[in-house]
Length: 69
Image (cartoon, one colour):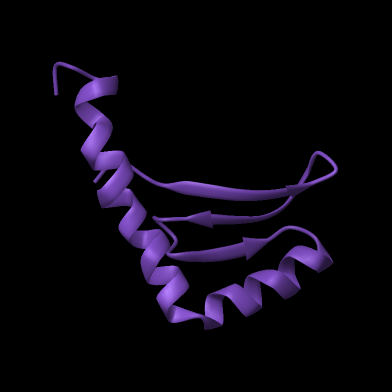
């Protein structure tokens, strides 16, 4: 429950969009990011794939990062 997958998009050192597995969708931080977030959020297969990364990447490697868990 406490593990989250975060994927951020940057341009020129500025974060313009972020996917958070706890939110379950992209959030835009600039006008360009908002437009792209809306487009990416419409693609349900892309969002499902990013949500699956939590289980595939984060939960799979939790023992490597925290050996006592």
